[in-house]
Image (cartoon, rainbow, N blue to C red; front, side, top):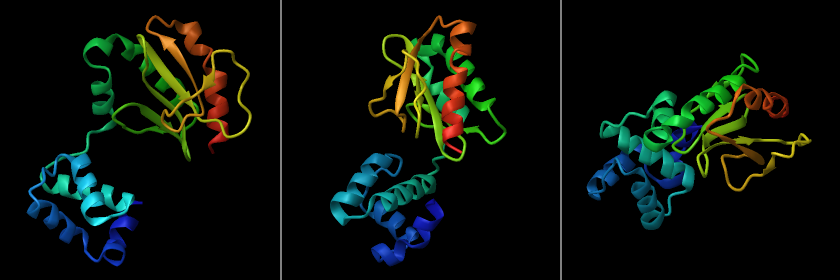
Length: 186
């Protein structure tokens, strides 16, 4: 998608990607602060959202920034006071990735999604010493009293929270929930 946005940038904004990166530099913005660059592009130039992301990414890369890999995102999520939650996170991710050869993890700053054709589960630190597991159901929601409607978490329609001391039975009980989300996001 980023390539398509970049290719049509001049047509939509009147400037090429290289022109925009130069504009960011001329404006004296910190190219590594992508959020500020995007805000400036929107507020000062009315640049559309996807174009903002492409330009900010290119400006940061031009300044030497390298996108973290999925493991780096995960390490950051579970550093410090949340480090003890990492084994539960890793176990849920392993269950989700084990559903098929067509799954893979991606990195995000607040959660780690597992994607098939589309994202079907997201895992991240939750409130009160828990790991949040968000499921994306497009059709029938499994009947499980632990599920509740998700509120603005990673494309999830429903979520549940696992305690830091979740055991093997707790994790195995997720399998039908994960399988339903996997099947509905082919």
